[in-house]
Amino acid sequence: MPDQSEIQEVNQIIKRARIAQTDFEKNGSQEKYDTAAQAVGWAIMEPSRNKELATLAVLSTGLGNIEDKITKNHRKTLGLLRDISKVKSYGVIDENIDKGIIKIARAIGVIGAVVPSTNPIATPANNIINSLKCGNAIIISPSPKGIAGCERLIHFIHAEFEKCGINKDLVQMIPAPGTKIKTQQMLEETDLVIVTGSQNNVRRAYTSGTPAIGVGAGNVTVIIDETSNLKDAAVKIAASKTFDNATSCSSENSLIIIDEIYDAFIKELSLVGCVTLEKSLQKKITERLWKKGQLNRDAVAQDAKKLIVALGLESNVPEDTKIIGIETDGIGEGYPLSGEKLSRVISIYRAKDFSDSIIKAEKMLKHYGAGHSIGIHTKVQLRANELAMRLPTCRVIVNQAHCFATGGSFNNGMPFSLSMGCGSWGGNSIDDNLHWKHFLNVTKIVNEIPHNEPLLSDIFDKYWSNAGK
Image (cartoon, rainbow, N blue to C red):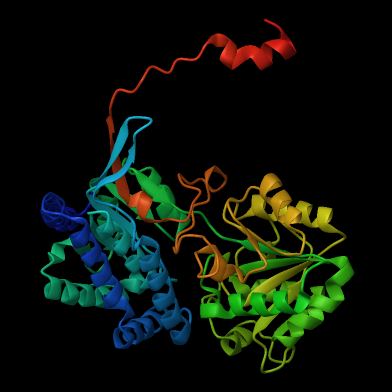
């Protein structure tokens, strides 16, 4: 039997959230929604608090590194606030005179959000900002390792709320210790659930009976073709792969290099700190990167020096190594290196030509990470188009550092987000980056317009001429 005290505890939190949200919406305005969102933004972005939160995140989870967490917290939040700064999310948000339809923004209610240990500060902040922008209350369920950081983030948010006269019950979290019972109750009793991280949690959300948005697993593959700027590609891949010790689901996991430029590109990778090991070391790396079928905690999201020790490669690589590349050719079940590694380890594949690279990339996506994203470094735009037409992917990132680009960047048009929907390929209800539109209901006022019924010939003339009546 479920622990009734835990269920009651969650129900009380939801009750307070509903009261606060009802008042927030009833007495709302665009200015109030925007102020609440900005308050959360400043709660995380104020430099001293950002540093404290980033430090706490790394110390409590053991994942990533402090300087990159600071950058991520700042950049992701600033980008999101830019994206939503001119967005209408209260009252009339659109009026189409020709169709006679007026759209009214409406809050969803109380949002429940499950967030991962890999991004224990930036992800909840992103969800909270989007929720408040659209008039909702939100309850966060952090991972066990992320509890301390989430508590501190919400403490800072409430301090900003107090300055603005905003009800603190609009933003709450499942109190420690977190349990499956508490999280399940939140999933079942809130109005919408957002889940980032564990695919087990995503599946629980989709079967909770509550409308849910879950995102799929990443396993980014990047193709480097014979037309690409090799130096530029190597620099961008290294910057992306090493950022926050590869905690991002958008970090490169595998490279597929066209044979014509294979040796030249391996040399460029060596110049940015990637040591490429021969196939003979596959078994050693696999046995140490995975323990009893699970990724080795001593290797996951660690600095390069710790990773090298965890993999037992002290005698194989220089001390200044930043990334471990391993040549391989196996893809699919029985070849762990073809999956997500959450570390500074990257698998390296040869392809005879571009057509062969597509075959390998498709096999990779169908094995793990379908729907998420793929990258290509090329000077031929049509090759990116071909990937988009043929592969089960929602994003094709062209000539960019993948982990910076996928979740929104100041030099591309993707919405800033830490949660990437993977469409039906990844078993998700969205194929977009999670953003403010997913936190909103829209009511349509439908007015009468002039009659607009076509003749049958308007629709079927071309069909009849080809197929007959």
